[in-house]
Length: 102
Image (cartoon, rainbow, N blue to C red):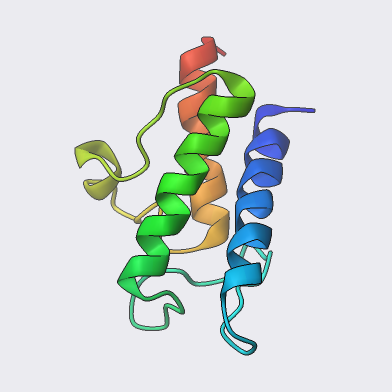
């Protein structure tokens, strides 16, 4: 499994967990095009923070890697890593690749 596949798997597991807590009709799609943040975003601020924290924790637990998804680097990107599920997967993959030196 490559880094991007690992990132997607971990994020989708977090989304599955969040969906058990969200009401019907407000659940998140496991799709790269799913908009998380911005004008068309589906997450409220509390759910977004929960997604970020749970994803960081899952990565640390399963891969032993500590990353930050909402730091200055993430916020300074031209396209926010938090704008869509696909962008978040790409950003997680980038951080994991940098950590692994690949």
